[in-house]
Image: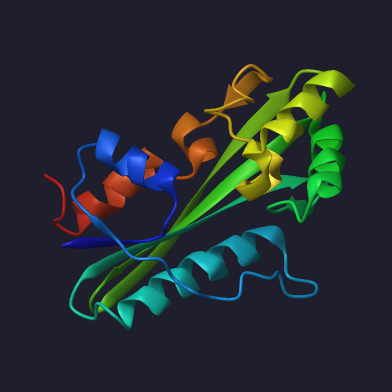
Length: 186
C-alpha cells in the first residue's frame, strides 16, 4: 500500500485522478528553510523529511513525500504569513516568470529515491484589484507563492512550460514513473 505523506487535498485529488490507490498520513516536521539553503536543496530535503517522518508510522509501506516551492529571483515564496505577505508575493509574481519545483521522495524499503520536476510559469500583469479580491477570498493563505493555479489564479498564467500537475502540487508523470519502477503501477 502506498502512503502519501501529505494532508494536501490537491495532492490527494491528483493521485485519485490518476487512478493511484493510496492512504494519506500528515507528516509533522519543521518546514523552515535553513539559512543559506538553496531553493532546490530545500525542496529535496523537505520531501525526504516528510517521507521519513511518515515511515516511522508505516515502516513496511511505500511512502510518497512531496514538497512544492515557488521561486522567483532565487527567493522561495512559501505559504504567506498573512494578507500583507500574500500581497507582496502576488505583486512580485505579476507580469513575471517564476519556477515551481516539486521534489518527490519515494521510500520503497530498503530503497529511497528523490527526484524533482520544475515548471516555468509566466503570469500576465495583474491589476491591484484582482490581487486584492483574490486575497480577500482567502484562497492564497495556505498555498506556496500565495496562489492556486487550479483555483482563482487559473486565468493568470499566460504561459506554462512543463507539467501543469506539478504547479498544482504533484508532477504525475514523474510520480507514475517512480511508482512503475518499483512495481506499484503497471
